[in-house]
Length: 200
Image (cartoon, helix red, strand yellow):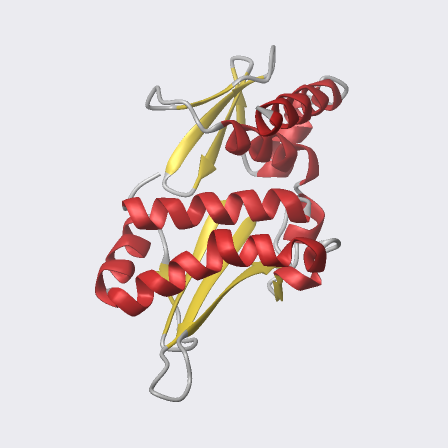
């Protein structure tokens, strides 16, 4: 109940801020498309439809995002710098990242590491189905365009009897301008859930 109230408050605050902005600038700055009072925005392998009248968020196929993802979408519209920096940073490098890191690790990195340890081939197939591009980094690594101007990388290093398997989630440095550390923790946690389910 507390989390629901927090998310509802964050959503309403974002709506108030969006109402003061030019929808066409929000669309172009985020990599979306404004048409008929709606912004269409690519989110991983799905498309979000955002009404510029009430800032409601739905999936193009008719589904509805989770409340935390709706907030993240609106915050991305507000904060997207409109370009990538092509430099990866860790979660700890974000403002407030050290404070949230333990939650971030447990919600996002740890589940993905367990999935990689258990069945790396399935993880690889799932990553590809969500739009991940395999790159040469570690023992398995994928780049994802979570939003048009938000690149997320997941990488894994296989352990042995002496060294545990490890993994990490990194972001293009532009993420520090686009979203807050708390938003990126929610985004990454949801992303880990998509990987486990094999879909958004």
